[in-house]
Amino acid sequence: MDLNSLQSCLSRLPLGQIAYFDEIDSTNEYALSWAEAGARHLSLVVADEQTAGRGRSGRTWFTPPGAALAFSLVLNQEELGFNQITRITGLGALGVCQVLKKIYGLGSQIKWPNDVLVGGSKLAGVLAEANWGGDELQSMVLGIGINVAQESVLPKSELNFPATSVETALGRPVDRWEMLKELLEAIIGWLPYLDQTEFLQAWEENLAYQKEWVQLISEYSKPVKGRLLGLESDGSLRLELPGGETRFFQVGEVHLRVVDRS
Ligand code: ATP
Ligand code: BTN
Image 1 (tube, protein in one colour):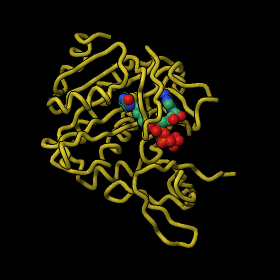
Image 2 (cartoon, helix red, strand yellow; image 1 turned 180 degrees about the vertical axis):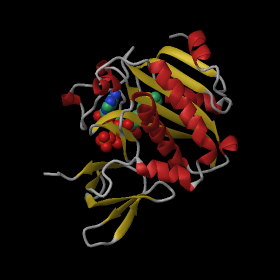
Image 3 (cartoon, protein in one colour; image 1 turned 90 degrees about the vertical axis):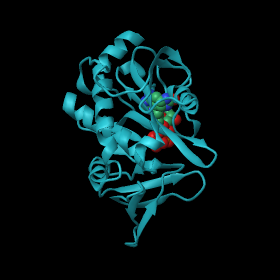
Image 4 (cartoon, helix red, strand yellow; image 1 turned 120 degrees about the vertical axis):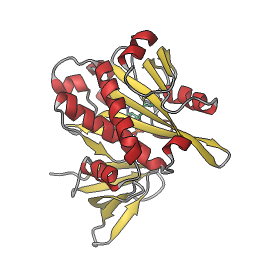
C-alpha cells in the first residue's frame, strides 16, 4: 500500500486529510499531534506496522508488518456536537462487528468496553483518546487495530486473553483495504446518530456475555461479580449483583471476564 493507492481506495468517503506510513510508532500518537495542530474532521492515519502500538493504560498493541489493520480517525468536537467520549469507543467496536458480518458473514461480540471477540478470542481492539485544549474537549481520536492475518496474533504465552485473526476465523485470505473502506463507511454512517437510542441499542445488541455471570477485575479493588444486563446511556455497564441489586460500572481500569461456565 502507498498513499496514492489508499487515497483512490477511499476516494468516495468524505474524509479529511489522509496519512499513510509503512512503519510508525502509533497511529493514535500521530493523530493526536495532528489533531492538536488542527487536522480536519475525519482525517485518517493508517500504518502497515506499529512499533509502539498502544492499548488502554499504555498496554502494548502488537501490529507486525503486512498482517493487520491499524488506523486512527480524527473526530473534531465541533463537528460531532455531542460530548460523550465513551460512545466513541462503542462506535469503533460496533463498526468492526457490523463490517465483519457484512463482508464475511462473521459473527462477533464486543467485550465491554473496547475489544471485539470472535469465537471467544480477541480479534480487534479500540482505543479512543481525547485531545483537550485546557479543560475543553477539542477532538477525539478513534484508533482501531484488527488482527487480519495469523501473524498478527501473539503467542499464547504473551497474552492474558486468547486472540485470533480474521483470516484464521474464516480460513481464507481477505483484503484488509476493503475492510478498512467498509469500516470507515460504517463509522461515518453512525456519526449523526451517536446521541440516539438507536445507536445505543445496536451497541448493546452486540455485547458479549449477555445475561451471563461475569467478573469485573481491577487492580485497585476487589473483583465484582454480577450478571451482565446491558448498557447505560453513557456506556456504563449494568450488572445485577448476586443479591439482586443493579449496579453500574463506568469505563475505567477494569477487565471483564466471564465467570467459568463449567
Ligand atoms: P483484557 O480485558 O483483554 O485484559 P485489557 O482491557 O486489559 O484487555 P487492552 O488494553 O484492551 O487490555 O488490550 C491490550 C492487551 O491486549 C495487551 O496487554 C496484550 O495482552 C493484548 N494484545 C496486544 N496486541 C494484541 C493483538 N494484536 N491481538 C490481541 N491481543 C493483543
Ligand atoms: C486495546 O485493546 O486496548 C485497544 C487496542 C487499540 C489498538 C489500535 S491500533 C491503531 C491505534 N493506534 C494505537 O497505538 N492504538 C490503536
